[in-house]
Image (tube, rainbow, N blue to C red):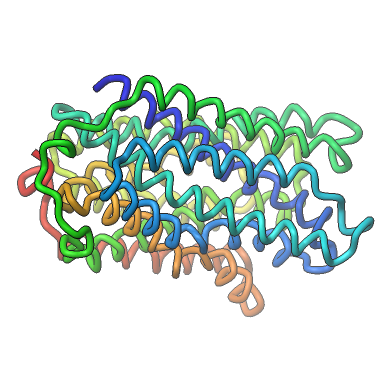
Length: 394
């Protein structure tokens, strides 16, 4: 089962690389493809990528419950690899006009579907393949998101120093995103269906989705916080504070590096304190650190590190918490749609910040929206069970 966890983890890392490529280059994409829209143009590629994730989470989760986790994982890896590679080939707005932003937007939609589908299979496969220290391994799995971001941040920071960055340099970030397609071969050879899935009694996946309303509530809160926090940082530093790419790329890199041990620690603590307790504690700490960061003024290296640590505690429980809430015959559908269905609302987080910033500062807007996310997540966790004690994944 070690191969299952490693395969799922690598898939999630490279899935996150593809998502991180859109986030870290948001300011660049605005200048190349959406030159007339300002801040809105910077957040549109991110919005288009995340709002279609619920569809992918449901479709591929349903497929994984009926046909197997392994097949779904291979398809989604190939899908998101192809869509990001094609993005690097699109001519700029200056050459082909409106066709440029339309094409980018369509590819972001396609990529969002496959990224959403990857969650359904990778998270479910990983959590069904472990029986001990599931919280710790949940933190490791979720930290794959940040490892993917760290890889793309390193590339961005390096390429941003080149004179041709805004013309061709940024495209290499997207071309490299095709590499994960090779993972499909590794997954096909090394990964097997989890024993718990093979031996479980099968049923129509929709029948086991009763916890969905509560798990989506939790994930809406988590994702609003993330997209008003770490995922907003490249836009905030580049578009609002007008820092040069190499500077805000480095700060984003530090933020994500610090977040990796934070997630692992949070996952480990959830094996002792419980998923629910650790989730609520992470929400409170995240709100405090984010508020201090946004309202303190100019970012520093130390404030960025504290921000990255505090903001990544809560979501570390997501893989284990969601997997433990759903029965095996509907687990991939439940996990995939919970994690991604939240984007029906949370996907517009940065648009909410953009609109609210017309009446107050961007910093205050980010804190207000992030605070609403913390409240929603706290309520969702509060009304749900402690899955360390009451789990359907045994």
